Length: 209
Image 1 (tube, helix red, strand yellow):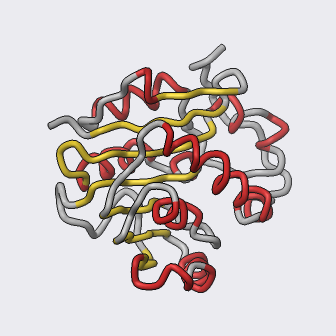
Image 2 (cartoon, rainbow, N blue to C red):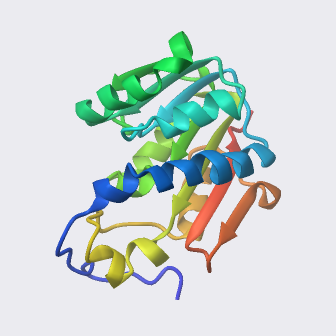
Image 3 (cartoon, rainbow, N blue to C red):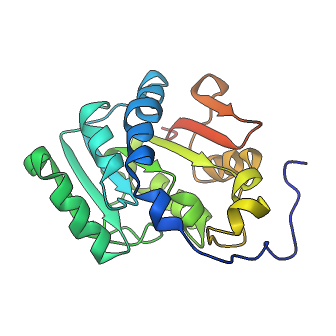
């Protein structure tokens, strides 16, 4: 049942997160499928923050090529990921700046950007609710948080936990929507898509004016 919580997550025997997160297949799916669907849900903005660059800078590239972004600050807590993403997105020029930064404490002014993008980053953040609040904080009124995510229905599946380490307190669709609204973001059903039995969710949520 959605929303059911385990007292402890299933064990991880081999953490192969990096193999999937930075895989070419994952990148192409995000670029061609998830990015296009977020654009159809209305993701758009000139100034942008990306949460979680990975080693390919997926969200930054989608923001520029699909969402019309001209000034992107892309953050990741891992310096190696930032450096690799910077090299792989060199063709985007000065439209994108890659920086080491924490999604729960972004070095970005209040109400200063048009768009925040997150491609499967939230479920890796220990305090994911704090990351949602930060997205709401840095967005200008009417700015958009565009995200694509896996929910606890797949993150907590024993088969995935066995090969992929994640923090214990993950979210289902209802909990994610609640956190977005608590952060001052509007969630309209017309701009929310789920799939695979609520295991996958995409949302474009504007900050309340």
